[in-house]
Length: 518
Image (cartoon, rainbow, N blue to C red; front, side, top):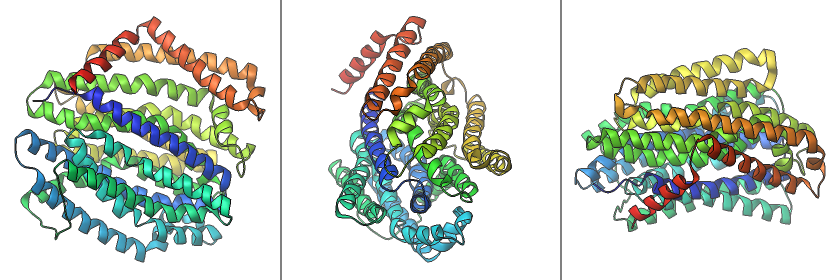
């Protein structure tokens, strides 16, 4: 068995995901400035969310959960996995082609189901038109997810993690070109999305071929292995896609109020930065590692891997969550308030960011706990948990809408996230010691929380005293940079003093994992 490379795998995934998120920030900043909250952005959000929602079902949900696990087991046993990968490729291609055809025929119905409040005004027709253009993106991204799963299972994390960067590069370039040449920038954006999907698929397809897994289009076959894959993948798809489903429910509830869909979208993109960098990276790397260890009966190693993933996740998640809760307005106003986005928009977006911040640790912990089930090919339990979480989300979003208005979906999403974590945690407790964190995890989590609260208190005081700096065009960027750097310094100093972590230990872990890759 090869040496475990959890952290060394996490590092390139985290780096490329961070790069993608930074470029994603640039994309969202441009969207807010060039398009801004309003009918055009509302329509774009609804149209673009359709392929993204189905991507969670047909791509990341099913194949990161089921395909990677079964592919990894074939690699570990010495069996040639190429035939299995080819059959999965053919089956996925046929399924997603059928989905694209159905979606294109019934696009008005899809828009109505996911944004009923648009019906009868210009946003509905705009969303349908945009939907016809961007929906084929699901085909390219679903196949790209399969190739990414192959690369992740064979330990080639970097290329798969780098592929999403292309979407942001293409989108930013298109919007800048559109702004320079004139016309509606949103049209440049929507036409770029399927083009970026082709580029992402080409990148991972070529990398997979170079890794020795050469897949070519063919007719699908329902072999016993494919039937087994489908039995595992179908419930996994819903379990992994619960966040997207909750977002769509929230979108449906908020669609009655103009601009609300745009506000929630921009807030969602801000909290997705730590969620993407930490949660997705740990989930991608942890699943193959847990599968290998459990297949070899290495329960203590699996428990150590789970604990390390949890510690690294919360080390960066808890301070991010506290910052979102305590000082959301400076973050939002500096990042987004320009062009078509004004102060009223910033205030609304900041409120949503603070509420999403409450749920951020839950969204991250889901990424850590779900691989415990998927590594054992138990996708039914997360499926039932996801159903319960979706009921919680829908009930709160609809029920609170009459009380608190458009912000109800954000409250519901955070509450549903914690409900999902509670169920995953309780279910993992029945799996034995391999699915439990070591005692050190709880001690360190408590100390990380104390360090985060210390940082939050100082950030709050700083903003109260220096809030005028964030409204000065020539100073607000430096003020935000100072706030972030100061908060990071306070957090790491407090964490080191409290024993939440040792900086020397982090450096030693990186050195050990780098030596393990040589």
